[in-house]
Image (cartoon, rainbow, N blue to C red):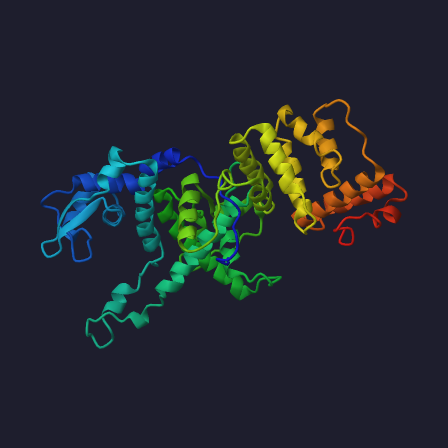
Length: 449
């Protein structure tokens, strides 16, 4: 994913709703509870982590038990420190106090400020998720000479590569989510997500080596998504434990679609979409959100939505229209739709789609362009669809010009699709002289069409 490309727009939930979601996540709620639990006797090590002997008390304060209780409590403490809920007051003594942001999340901050705190805590979990399970660490502590020094060369771990791998997976998951036209994006099978960052785009049939890499990646992602779910980033259905019964054997990628859910399913939450978009913006990506164009002109709206998925374009246009009086909006849209440049046909298509959302109050604007060579055709379509009276019939030249304009717009929007070919074949079947006439149409896109 290039940082120079514009991503599809995210349909974000209201910040007030997202802030409530953030406060209810185990990640942030535990961090807040530990920040309140900490007192004068609380001590941290040089890195700000809770000293080992106090971790059990922290776990008890959180109501945690079981083999993961200590690790979960330690992570919650790190999140509290990193998010500014706790601050170290004396590094030598290891003392702490409530941080400036504790009041933000306990009632004194705006939804946006609460989300900023959650984002800071999220970075802690993402950093932890990028660290593999260093099962060989104990063996690596003592080199063969018994020096007791950590032999990092014996650990097959590249921290930067592991962080880039997780970022790449989350980036692809974000793309799949914001590019989905459904109101709620479908969960993504873990094998497909792993393959999206492992299998080269130009590889037809994956080799055995590549399939093995995909299986290994699935296991890493299974662990990572289990860690990220309590942060509120994803909804995750883990890999079926039965598939991992043999610890020495990586599970093969599924071949039966009915079995795919057993291999893990993941979906970004609305909070996750917000969080990943914020990280993408921070990394320099152009990651728009629906509503970004609402206060801009009609030219920006038509050009911007030209590359949006249909549902996002519809939502963006609705927000744009709510800020304008119908007649003025219609006139502005029609003026922006004019032009003979390459992008003009798609602008006119987006204009026509936008005008379909405007009520009868826009009728005068449509009547004003009935004699316009570029806009007269779409004006007649709108007036007819809205049951207007006294709509003059179009000339044959206008019909063919509008046909070329519509086909050119569809080509720009979706390429030479089967649906478009069927449309042209239908037009040719209805009009015996279609092709002999259409090539003479005075439209800039005639040759391309």
